Structure formats: C-alpha cells, structure tokens
Length: 511
Image (cartoon, rainbow, N blue to C red; front, side):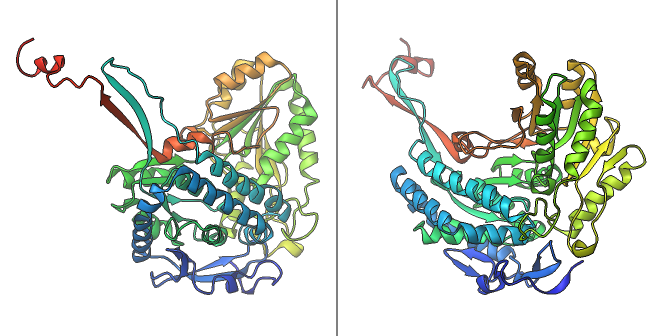
C-alpha cells in the first residue's frame, strides 16, 4: 500500500519531533505499551512519516489517572485563571501556526493553503473564543420560585472526559473536543485516529508550553478497538465525546451505556445542496464545487447531494463539471495545488468503489478516475460529478467521504425539500434562492443541525455544530457546548427559618 522511505525533509520532521513517543500523558511524551507499532504514511507520496508504539490499555489507564489527579486543581481554578491560561494557549498556537499547517498537510494530504487558511486559523480562533467563554459559565439567575426559598443553578465540571476524534480534521477536532471541556473545568484524555496523531500531540504540547497544568490534557494514540474501547468503558471517565461514522458511534454508545456516561456524538452526514430555479446559477455552481471538494470531500458537512430544480438542472450539471475540471490536483506542498489526496489508499479505493458501482445505474459526468503519472503513488482521486442516479441508490444514500458530488433534478418546492430530508442523516444542508420566503421555508423544514442560505461550509466559533437524526446529538463549539461539558445543579435555600414547616404535615402530624 505504501513504499518505505523518508518523507521529503522540508515537509515536517515527524520522526525527530516524536522520538520520545506518540503518547502525551501528564505533560510529557512517552512510548505506547501495547507491543505493537503503527506507521503514519504521507498519502501524497506513500512514504513513511513516523513509526510509533501504539497505546494499549495500560497507557489509557495512566492517562485517565493523570487526568483524574489534575481534575481537583483545574476544576477549582477561577474562571479568570482558566481564561488566562487559554489566552496564553491561543498565543502559543498562533506562534506555531506554520508547524501545525505543515504537520497537518503531511499526515492528511491537505493542501497547505487549506491548512494555513482554514484548519490552523480556525483552531486559534476556537482557543481565543473559549478563553473568553470560560468567564461566562452561567446558570439561571437566583429567584424565589417557591416563595419560601431562594433557588439558583450552578454549572459544574463533570470530571474526566474521554474523547475520540476522527482523521479528517485532526487538529480542529482536537480543539473542538478539548477546548470546551477544559474551559468548563474538566480534564481530558483524547484518542486521535491512529493514522493522524501528529497535530493532536502538538496541540497538547502547546498547552503545556502555555502553562496549562500537567494532566489536564492527555493524548493516547492507539486503535479504536483497543485504546478507544478501553477509554470509553473506563469507570473513571465521566463523559465520552465521539466524532466519526454513525456505525462506530453506535458501538461507542453501546460501550458507554454500561457505565451510564454522559454521551456526545457527532456522526455521519450526507448534506443536501438544494438549488431553486430562481437561484444565482453561477453562485450555486461555485458553491457546489467548493462545498463538495473541501478537504477532498472528507468532511461530514460537505455538499454531497445537489438537488436542482429542473429549469436549471442541465446548465448546473454542465457548468459544475466544467468548473470541477479546472481544479488542480497535486502535491499538497506544491504552490498552486487545489486538491490533495485522500487520507489513505484504503479511503481512496473505498471512494473509487462507490463510483465504479454507480456506473451501472448513473452517469459519471466528469472525474471518476485515479490520476497516473507523477501522482500514481499517492492516494489521489479526481473531482467527480455523478448525475441521473435514483434517490434510493447507494451513491445518494450512503456517505462516500470523497470528492464526489451527485446531482438530481426536482420539480416542485415540496419535492425538493422532501428529497433533501430523505436520508438517515441530518448534520448540514444548504438552500440557494433569491426569494426570502423560499429560503426561510428551507431553514424551517430541512431537518439538519445547520442550514446555510446561498453558501455552504463556513463555520464560526460562536455558533454551534451538531446534527439531527443519525448524525448524532450534542453541540461542538459556541457557548452551547457547555451544555455537553457541565453538570447542572439546582441549589435551594430556605428563607423562613421555621422549624416546623407547613408541608411537613403531608408526612406526619396535623395542621
């Protein structure tokens, strides 16, 4: 699947940076104790980047113990103290921006312009946002709701959080998991995908540099079956947060249920892209290409199903295919590259198989092939447009997670919205129209956690991210994330100083 050798030296010196190991426990790098190794591979070249010792159950136990030991001190810090630490953290991340961008591009195959302009700045912004949000962990204001008592609500940290992050946005997912958890006073053990651990480890190291106490953030790099399941099942882990496929999310929920943990799931998506006949066609075409190809389509909110009202359908297909053909596929570190490889050859082959099966029932308008020549050793796949598939076909209903957009026509507005809702998923969607009433109807009736109007993909730290239906439950980012990472406690004070209260007679005695 890949060729042994050293990745190009100017990409990122991973083997040197992680010579001490790929586990980060209690403020230092250590080697895993599972007895097995894993090799991180550059998907652009097939070359080995880093071989490290995988985490086993003992490493998970050590990381949880470190987080548990750090919890009282971190939970007892004032909101201002946690805020100050997170502000320093954001500054360290900003100083290390180029390192993070290169490491993320190396392990994921993302073009440098994407990591420099999206992944890394977004992560720095998340850290700055939660630095401020740490001071605003508020409950309901005090009041005399019974007449004889004063009630108020406290928000308190839960304890040790065990989080599992995916391989498509390793740095941003580390931030989305870690930042709200620690801003609320929790400590955390993060398990990144074993194929992309580099930036999660760097993120934890940056936190230590910023003065966040040892044990508050820990990272275990291991497989889901061994390290992941042990983390989710651990009796000292009070909450599990998982981002990944719906199938694996069901397994996470099953394991977490045994110890009655708080559970947060951000799962798969199959985002509809609904184009009404009064839409700006050029804007919709540009939005569809950008929204479907971001991160080589490996994005749970990526545009995957374009439903185009029939008067615009043929023109949309023609213009989208033409624009896709201009996208420059190449080395993520080369100037001018628009689209890098998929994260692995396994993922590339999975995407290609979806398209190959679709040829029997749909039309591949452009793409649908693995490039050769200088790109033959990488996990590349050309931007692909598929038309004329049936609504119940695999390519429309299943999450492909690659640079593939499927286009279908619709006639009436009712039909378009019905088709948009006709998958098990509900993470994100967009609608394209110049008519405010049509657009507002789409925002009300499309069942998804985020609905964009005349755009697709932008996210901001101040707004929540999370889905409906099989896309899971709970929110990342924004102040809403504190609802996931805090316990709500009702405190009630008696104001009467009366020993024998009137309500006691319902238990003993007479009035």
